[in-house]
Structures are given as structure tokens and as C-alpha cells.
Length: 241
RNA sequence: GGCGUGCCUUGGCCU
Image 1 (cartoon, rainbow, N blue to C red):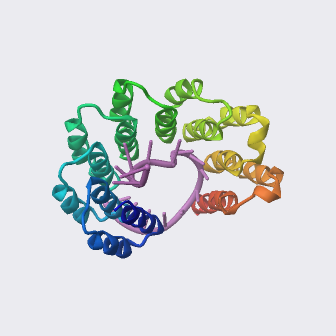
Image 2: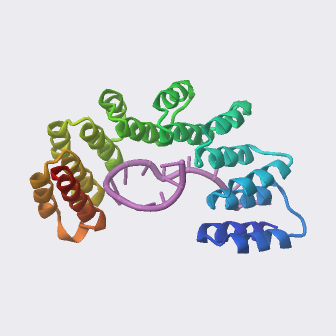
């Protein structure tokens, strides 16, 4: 039974829903973990209808079952239905909280996300990272900064989010100041450079963006670096016309 | 023992 479940998960990750379903159907007996794995297969495929059918058929439902279904709703924009399930859980674990918070962030409901974040008993590093990126996406510099100051300093993701927060509120100088303060090992991280290139490009500072791409070690320049710069030029041309 | 969240940086898909 465990082997079958592993096969279901593997094919889900590989993207082969039909094969996952084949193994599921072949199982002589199925426990909740097997059902949960199949539910997850539909969720990954964003097949909400099948996911809901499967969800309704699962008994007894575990915390994983409920959380997977929260995710199914959240990632398809049905945040209120996600919340309904979340509210039925008496003691959500960190994963359940994180999925719910991320759902609100993705939906642009940053206030709801913040409320949950404040109510969450033990926010983990993951939660803070989610929330920081949520604040950053909305350009809420002060909120982002408060979290950034609490986060692990060697983590490039937190720095990128903070640079993005400045960029989205037009505070390019502060973004660059922060970028220049980053730890040395971030200089080998493409996303760190890309975040600053994006900050310049977004605010129309294309010369600086180009200069930064040039200063970036060629070995770590990637498609995103170039796309970022090119899209900056494209949007300027559109404004000119 | 096998199942659920990774986040950040450009674009695309979906809304």
C-alpha cells in the first residue's frame, strides 16, 4: 500500500495525473494517506471539481485532507471557501496557517493575511517570508521593513522582497542602498541582481538597469535578467507612443 | 514508514 502511494505521489510530481489515478484504482485497499495523495494529484492539476469530489468521498478526513483542500480553493481564487474549511480546524498547524495566509496574499487581501499572521501562534520562518513578500507586492514598505529586520540576514529572498517593496513604492534610492548593503555571498545569487535590475526597470531607470546587468557576473546572468531589462525598454517605448 | 505550504526576482498561462 505504501509503495502504491509513493507511486501516486511520484507521478503527481511528474505531472502524470492519469498514471497516478491508475495506481490509485489498482490499490486493493486504500487508507487516508492514499486518498490524500490522490486528492493532491487533482489539486496539482488545478482540477477543482474532481478535487472536491474526492474530498467529499474521503472519510475520515485528516488535517492533511483539509489543508490540501484549502490549498485547492486558495489557488483557484476561491479564498472564502478556503477560509470556511480553515475555520473548521480546531488546531491548525503551521502548514495550514501558511497556506491560508498565502491564499490571502495571492488574492491581494493583505489585511486579512495580516490579521491571520497576527493570530498565528508560532509563525515560522516560512510564514514571515510569505508575509514579507505579501507586503512587498503591495509596496507596503513599513510593514515589510518590520519583518525584514526580524528575518535571517543571510537569506537573499528576504532581501529581494525588501528591494521589491521599495521598488513598488518608487523608492529606488533606498532599494539601491539596501542592495549595496547585501552580504557578499548574495553576489553569486542571480535573483539578488535581478531584483535590483527589476527595481530600476520598473521605475524607468533603464540606464542604471543596463549598467547593473553589465556589472553582473556573466556566469549567473539568466533569462530573467535579460527579460527584465528588455521589458523595461518595451514599456518605455509604449509610453513614448 | 508513504500524503499537504516555500518563499523572492522578468514574462507567459488563468482571473
